[in-house]
Length: 81
Figure (cartoon, rainbow, N blue to C red):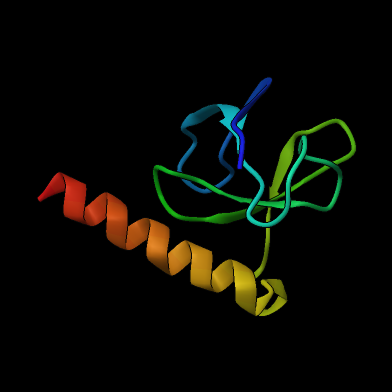
């Protein structure tokens, strides 16, 4: 998976600035409707048409994204300890 520069936006949950993204599944540049995960707080976000991000309600998060979210947060916590 590749990292892509995006326009600067902020996470709706933790307000950290976001300017790079990686799709939670698949290859290529992020597109409207794709999911990404905030590296600061772990929120699942979904790209809009202009590559802003919206918080995805928990009940709408697909299972494959929840798996990525759990693994990513474990990796971040392990690195911090």
